[in-house]
Image 1 (spheres, rainbow over the protein chains, first blue to last red):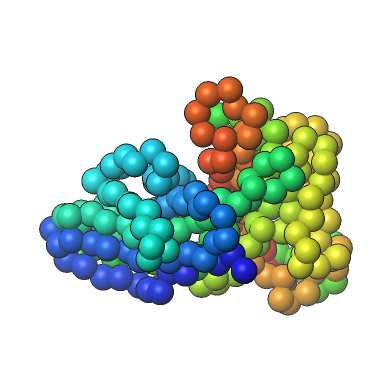
Image 2 (cartoon, chains in turn yellow, green):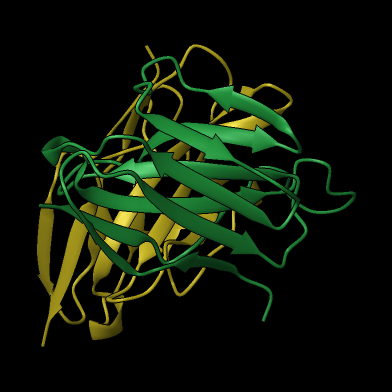
Length: 111
Length: 117
């Protein structure tokens, strides 16, 4: 079955420390993966997607098909990075796409 | 700003009393989704509309229905809410027919938190 796993519910790091939010997936086809972020009292919004191979707000994520992982990384955490982060797998359905989400990781960046 | 708007932000209903949550969008997207998110859990897709075509997830209870009267609006109807239906309900849109750019990015509303007394 298609599945997305985020093993950490909460990750606390100090400001300036590196951050890695883990995401593993199980998918029979060619996966397309996303990271979404939800800042306090804001809506869920796209952070980045693996196809674009971009860096957004200093975050990067590389798809590792061998390890079926899509971990989110940032070399130096900032306090404004504190948020809820969700990994999502896009799956084709009925002419469009649907997401399978992980349970999310709350990142707390401490001063 | 073009947006996905959910009303109300908080909804309280009584056990067994029908309730409707609404979602509107100014993005003119073909697809609208409804998700249920319980505390500390992943958002779970209930169903989606592609234009007027309704697509129900296999494990969505019959208690949950949806209507999409036009492109801009989509409603989630809970016919007889139970205590287990208390959750955050998220609406999202996407545009799989976009001529340029990614076709599978979803744009979310702020959600409606439903309480069942």
